[in-house]
Length: 475
Image 1 (cartoon, rainbow, N blue to C red):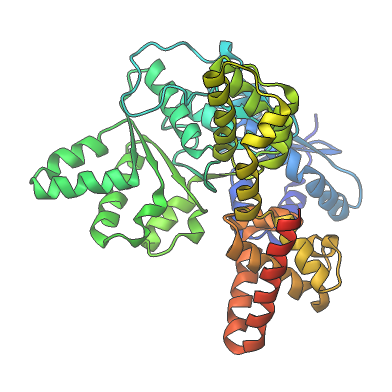
Image 2: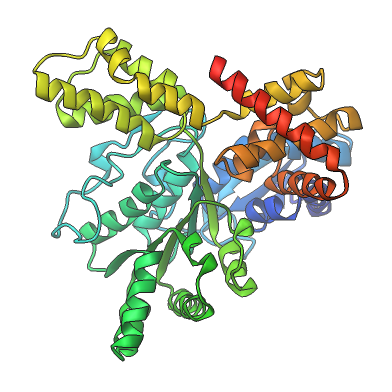
């Protein structure tokens, strides 16, 4: 095949994508893509992993091809291939693929597939005693994969196969009860069971407590040796460090750097993306930003049903589909609330020695359903309340219109979402037409600024919040 020089076309298309997406989103997906070569009507680009390639194809390929066509004046096909090392120009057929580093070697699940559990044959059986600080049920086998978490799950599986090499450090973030700890410990359990690597799982609070004990007991050498010489460090709830002293932040920074330099695996969880963390040193935030960042979102209806069915089967209890559907439709917030409701019904079955009917489920879970509807608002409810107030449609708030009649209510709605819910800015952005979280942050900052200069706006927002609560109660 004759080699055509279309690299200029490719670079221009990337430049336009960078403008459209913003620096953070662009760098997260396009920095590691390598132009390889071109034919008369096609361009071949290389990716460091299969799931990276699949994610870019799903989200961005059509937009890239459209830009290439406009730039070249004719249609140019884009071929996406996996290469072991994208630093050179060697084609994948001439290179050995890296050993089992991609999620496609373990799971073919990408966004859009039906939720499922990992095939137990794909996860090796335990070879060592259970890790003393991790739950034995937090495994990949018991982690239900759906569209809300497929990217995060496949990345985690790849990491467990090649700790310290594939996607290091790894930063998992999302709201309460969405499975961050489960996914993190699944990585740890798999590595612990299938290798001789030393794995440490610890919460940020316990990390601080051990640090304080080390100082008080003059055992800081032992503390440093423990955390800086492990093979895998799993640390939960990074946001805990925000309001703590500078000394612990400094200690964690050096621990982080030492492990990273030694190519030891770091996995962290947080309730928000790194850019939203406050009162942490810029250099630590910078390290977090360089991680592979994945966000976990509330599971969709089909995934909620799958989680409930799997949990009931693991407990050896039969729960009818109509009861499963009832719970799934009424509890949409997170996995923790979902399992809590199911456990209530399982306890009833075990104590009363009789099956749960739909009527019994409605009676036993009445308080669960009521409290969830009152305490956990959906973004759509807020969008409807704001849209009605400003005589707009919800699609106006989600759409691309940029006139002031729509932009200002959209910013108001995003601000109220952040005020009244636990959704991250990434989740809010997705609900507003797939906007980037930086757009949401800009909108929130805009409204906060207006509240200082326009006293009447505060009254408007309070009225809107009241409308939101009333609408939520009626639903």
